[in-house]
Length: 300
Image 1 (tube, helix red, strand yellow):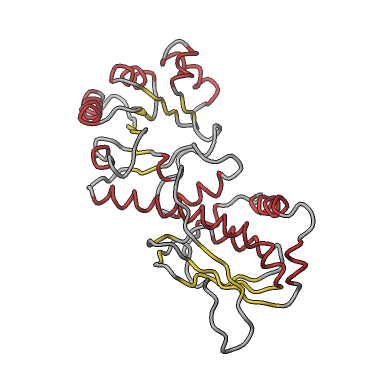
Image 2 (cartoon, one colour):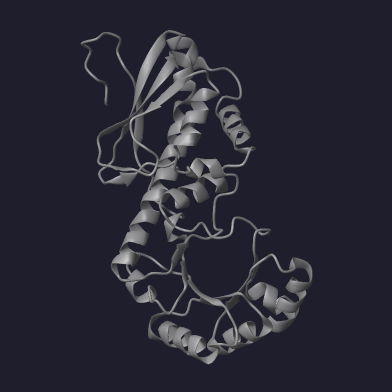
């Protein structure tokens, strides 16, 4: 049996779903009073105008599980689909289906949007011949990071560090406050120990040399672009060959438009917030079906 990305989710994730439901219905459910508790089926449709990746099904399912409903999926997590597609069927009491509708759709739309953009960027990079790591960033939405990082994984890219505790990253503010790159690295190592990777942001080849010499594991060549980026990366690899082991990362202002010039195999990691910030959501709708064997399917 193949492993599922859902198996990565921590034990606490279902409590977040509970909180999202509580936020959406803090008091009376007036609409639910209108529709009552008749057993109904609702069809989940993937809509929009473009091919999309389905991502976020565990979150969608949990919303309705907590409301006593059942979800039957007609697509697998990570599969692509063309609109309009009947993606899943939700079964349960009408008011319970509608209680979860908006929370579930918002989760699925956001997560699928991130997975779709992630897959698009990865496919483009591979098409340009890039064989390194495509990664997101930590520029995620507070309280929604788990869903966004999950979407990156479903889309086939590296989610990068999840939080301040999962890797040491020293950026310009850390370095300026410490006095130098070397001082910042030395201080970080005294508390981070051997088990945490250390990623250092640099603005030039000279700063990269200092970081490598001080023992950084990853060198982020921040906002260095074009021919200079490739030249600096090649120079660093040749200069330190056989002396230090490190990875080179390029980050900052990476989009579909300039991806080709940044996707050089002189770089080990290409990280970008383009895959999760300002990403278009995938359009889904959940439609209660009219009872009766010969009733017309409601897709509107």
